[in-house]
Image: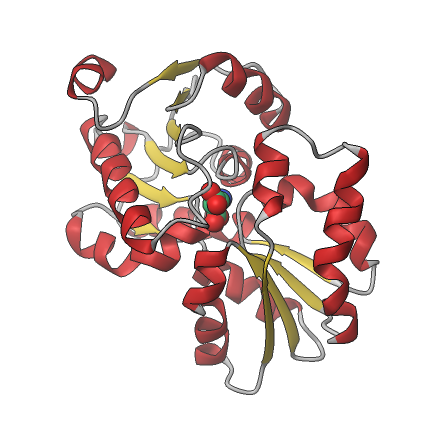
Amino acid sequence: MPSQLPIGCFDSGFGGLTVVKEIMRQLPQENLIYLGDNNRYPYGSRPPEEVRAFTFEIMDFLVRQGVKMIIMGCNTATAVCLPEARQRYKMPVLGVITPGSRAAITATRSGRIGVIGTEVTIRSDAYARELQRINPRLEVFSKACPPFVHIVETDEVEAPLTMEVVQDYLQVFHDQRVDTLILGCTHYPLLQHVIARVMGNQVQLINSAEETAREANTVLSERGLLNESNPAPYYHYVTTGTVDHFRTIGSKWIGQPLTVRRVDLGDSESQATAG
Ligand code: DGL
């Protein structure tokens, strides 16, 4: 039954786990395969052409695993190649930028919205375009925060310097008087408590995961692909980095022990044994 096939989700590393967590919560009957390209993060400071090549390598891998839908749990990949991915694959492909924009528009009262993301995402202007397509009167202030991804990947969220770095990058949004800040990189919700302390409780933080999972639910249900009976859903995690590192940090973020295996993308031998 196609409905019993897993959902595929990926990111450059741990960031997409924020989307996985929300899928587990909203769609507890779904099976899932997650790929973290931890060996090649960060995507956000690479040339878009390279991000595109990595993205399609991963999506081809997920298709070979027999997924029924792919969620790009990565803003950078979404910004670079969502429309092309939708043409390339027959199955539904979801990104995180439209859901995040919708959530921000619902949240803002002043119409002044901040966006933080990787250099590639911010340079692409994908959020500002999407927000202003929906409501041209919105004022959008964007800023790339390159060190944030590394802080999450190396498990330094609680390190003493982290608060200072976050403060430095986000100070500008106080001056711009935004009332809503989009966490436009899936790694950033893993730093959410630090960002919240810096921004204060007048500013609403938007994590696109919740709205993305809602959209997954709608699309699966429209296509008759919702898994409606699955007493024992499985979650398989694949990393291009080291299994131990992924298991340790991933288990902490997901809140339960993970089953992880390694794959070398681009290496035909390990691809042949990966399935
Ligand atoms: N988590 C990713 C995103 O949402 C990419 C982070 C990176 O590797 O730079 O953009």
